[in-house]
Length: 224
Image: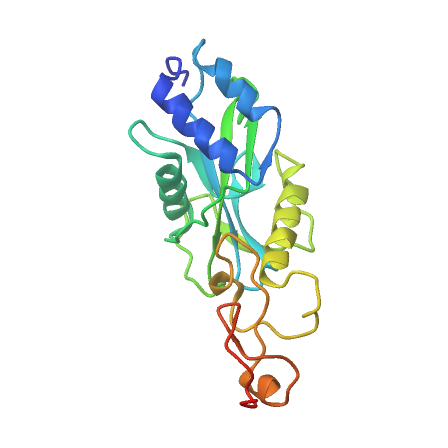
C-alpha cells in the first residue's frame, strides 16, 4: 500500500541509520534527500541473523521472494530497529539484540509493481540451537554461508557473506596474534570495533606474550 510522503522526522532518523550502515548501496543517502517529495512505500527493515560461528545465516522461505532474511515494513510509530526486531520475532520466534551498526542500506522494490523504498539490514548473532517458531506457510531455517540460495534479490547472498567475513575480522583481525584461539563465541567478542584474541594465562606464564586484560598490558608476569 502506498503511503503519504515521509515527514522530515522520518527522513532524518532514517538518514542517521544510513550513515551508520557498514555499506550503502543504490545511493540510499541521496535517495532519502528527495524521498519526502512523493508518496512511497513504508521503510523496510530486516535482520541478518548469524550463528555464533558466523558460518550460517537464518533465512525465511517467503512466498514469492524465495529465501530472504526475516524482515518487512516498518510500522508507523516504530523505529527501524524496533520494526526489524518485531519482524524477526513474528517470522522466526527469535528475540535478539541487534548489533550497533546496520550492515547495509539499500533502495529497492520489494514487489514488481511497488515503488522502491529504503531498506535497512541490521545484524544479530544468536545460537543456532535457538528454537524457531515460524509463520504458517513461511518456514525459516539456517543456511550455510558456503551454499547459494535462490532469492528475489540474488545480490544479497554475496553481501551477507561479505558482512560475515567482516565480522570474523573483528573477532580475529589479521596481525601478529594470528593462530591464537578466540575465547568464546563470536557474539561475545564483537563490540563495534576490532578486538584481538587475548592470550591464555598459561601462554603468558610461559613468556609467550604479556598477560593482558581488556587489551591493556597488566605487567610482566615474571615479576621482573
